[in-house]
Amino acid sequence: MRLTICAVGRLRKGPEASLIDDYLTRADRTGRALGLGPVSVTEVEDKKGGGMAGEAGLLDRALPDRAVVIALDERGRVMTSPEFADLLARHRDDGAQDVAFVIGGADGIDPGLRARADHKLSFGKMVWPHMLARVMLAEQIYRATTILAGSPYHRE
Image (cartoon, rainbow, N blue to C red; front, side, top):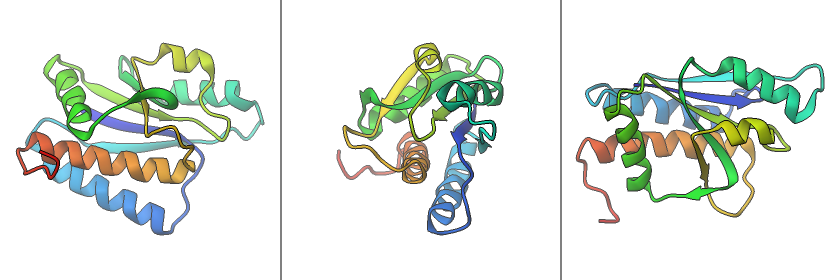
C-alpha cells in the first residue's frame, strides 16, 4: 500500500527536511516486506492566494485516486502509536492501494476537504508548525512499520 504525504508549502533544505528524509527512508526499508510503501511527499503551493479553498483544490488534485484520506487536524482523534499502526494495517489488509495524509496550510484544512477525509488525526491540542507536523508524521509512519514488523515497542 502506497503512502503519500500531501502538504501545503515547500520544504527547504534544513534539519526538518533531513529528519523527514531519514524517517521515510527507514519506513520504506522496514515497510517494504510488510506491504507498506513506498512513502512519497507531494507539496502544493497556492500561488494565487485562494486561501483554504484554493489549497483544498490543489490538495484534492494531489490525492491518489481512491486513496484513503487521513487529514491532520487539531480536532482529530489522538491515537497511540500502536493504534496508528493498526489503522494502517487495517487499510492495507482491506485492500487499500493508497493512503494519503493531508497537511493543510497556515489556516488549516478547508472544511469541505476535512469533512471528506476518512479519518482525522491529531498530534494533540497544541498547534504545531507544519514542518514539524511533517517530521512527526514521518516518524510515526516509520514507528508504525517497526511495530507491525514485530520490533519491541518501549510502551508495551
